[in-house]
Image (cartoon, rainbow, N blue to C red):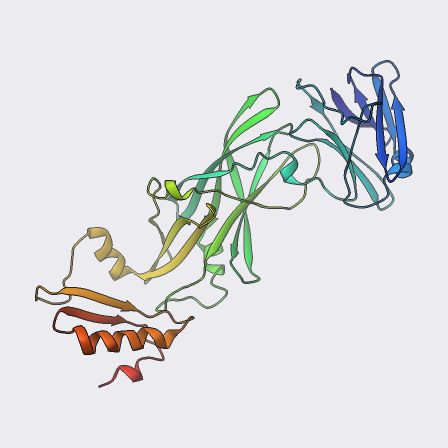
Length: 336
């Protein structure tokens, strides 16, 4: 099958049937092939489809959804426009031929919902997230990545890169990278870098791609990371943040198996101790250690109360520490 535009009309060739139909709101429009060529005019579509973002599927004369044979397809320009109205024609991964008004077709029509995170690396002080996915009909030509701060109205986007594409008839297996430099990652702190406080923000990662045949919607798809894979990926990535701090990037799977990330600035002295693997004992006795960590954004006072209870009741058996930031509201309460 071949689809292209000629004189602001959709041309469909080699469909191997003589008639196709569009039906919507009790209005039906039948198109008859001239030899092996269908001509679908802008005015024809205006008769049957005037509602925005309401795709309809071509059917056969027996009112069954038209299923396009799984052959090699050829697409050129696949939209027509007159004034402020634009019609897009597209083939879905289920081989349905659809038309939609004034709305770019969504990525979900072509993507197989299986984009899975594979690995993270750091190169030239850039965080590189590799993932794989499959899609149908249209070949991806560019990758766009997004990181959103969960529960906050802030996000960044960046261009990615396609590493490899393997084609099998109308299906594509894609390996791609999302690439975020340190300046982009720093903006996720929204002007307040959590140098010495616990950063409780979570960063959700998704992607979109581009195709040559038409503009598709800007809907982003979450990357998957199944929980059972969390121990099979390297979740310890470091970027040089500034003269005094490293940035710890830690990808991890959510409860629902999606990819998210934590970003934590770490003093370089702490980083150097960590990567050397040298253990520094906080005390010279043989007692086990309990460390209470301040969590400044949720029930901060509970951590202090718990720490004081531990000190009062378990000091003989444990070394008990409370980790707080230099700006903590708890500092005055720890005196005495």
